[in-house]
Image (cartoon, rainbow, N blue to C red; front, top):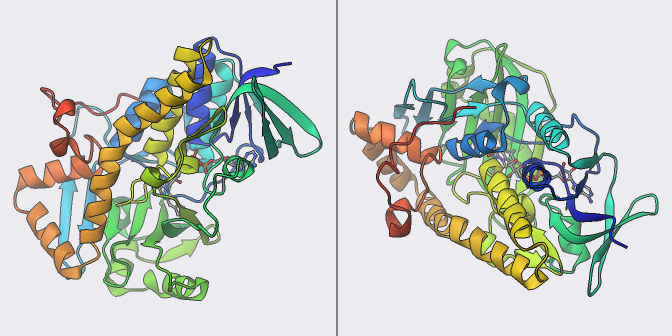
Length: 400
Ligand SMILES: Cc1cc2nc3c(=O)[nH]c(=O)nc-3n(C[C@H](O)[C@H](O)[C@H](O)COP(=O)(O)OP(=O)(O)OC[C@H]3O[C@@H](n4cnc5c(N)ncnc54)[C@H](O)[C@@H]3O)c2cc1C
């Protein structure tokens, strides 16, 4: 017996985006999450234009998200010490924002519920058993749910992926990143900062501004075999005492513990589907390999999975899974390859210095780099003529 047409495992951005679209399309959808909301998620809390436009499409209002702060300009510092100021377009919508995940994810859960999704909190997936006609999820506490399709939105350590034997043994993510909330007294900490530091390349450190003088500070590095947990913690301890960073932040006061978490960024080499299952967001390793940003990609893959199911619910699983695989690859793969290539270039100090020098040539280069960086248009737009259209590079920001 089918309990629900679609079971979404995980109520982060990927799962709630999928559930919102499915429920809005009149499909019976249940979402389970092992935690209770509001819950924190270790993240930089930065929203790109891509994420903002998708949140708008879902119908989220920024007014529903408590710690929301718009971002109008970005500062970047090269390894050689050049500071570059990049202004995003003003007066035509939002191109970037920062908001604590504890608030964003709760607002997304509320949105999914208001559209008719049945969200069950404190419900941990343990195992999955596919059959010819359905798939049964066993939850902690001996509960079970039988469904036609599972959307696996359960993040980096996806239980779904493991349960179906589709995980990569020993895989611990492509990036490792840490963040902390602090109060910062420095005047310049009210802007969004990205520091390219010699010892972090192609990774970087950040300070993202939040309301009430708070900042989300953190850093991410591309995982190398040699990196030990001890080295990572040592880097954290001294990074924010570096003179040029201290100068921006001023006196700081910790308001949360420091937390680290891996970032999966290998969309081309993971399976996007399994038996009656569609992987989305971090469970599909969909983050941008150059920046480690994944909220936009989580929303996008969640929405594509929902569309594939909506289109073929009464058809065969092959139609659903095939449609999702094709649409996810078409939407994300070229950008992923472009970002991977650029990330390799940013491993070099010389190349990173040169890139920031080129970016700061004039207003046009600064503005367009900022828009490209914040995913206003696709990373690989230049290499994918099918996406060229009049106005592709001058769209208004999100109205959210
Ligand atoms: C330090 C750091 C900084 C980052 N900064 C940014 C940033 O500034 N901007 C950006 O766009 N991206 C950033 N990212 C990446 C971003 O956080 C992720 O890509 C994004 O959260 C992925 O969303 P998701 O919905 O796929 O998964 P998640 O947000 O991880 O949600 C997964 C959900 O699944 C639930 N779950 C897990 N297992 C089970 C189970 N067995 N049963 C039931 N529920 C389960 C979890 O409780 C969770 O709610 C950062 C990541 C890190 C680590």
